[in-house]
Length: 122
Image (cartoon, rainbow, N blue to C red):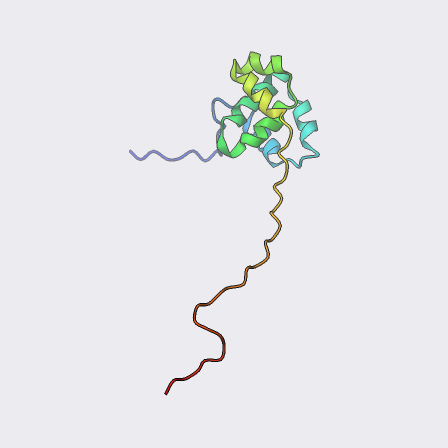
């Protein structure tokens, strides 16, 4: 017997605290729209979502954004001790942009081959 693949669409990861449609909206949201989407979620769900996103390499930064909307106690309650780490990282100041070092003047190349006028010894 051949088993077919479901055609009803993708299913959310069982560990994801929100429905797949909600996760998609949050993932695709513009930065200015994200606070409204997150405010619609209960704090406990937001904290769990922060941990879920934080744990995945491709959504790690989004997890920190979500964690900024949660209190430290909420993150610890939802995630355990890792909630302290997530809270701390979410509230770190942004890194300063790296400035390129000023260009060094080019040193003149010295050739041991002699000057431009060469004498011929016949």
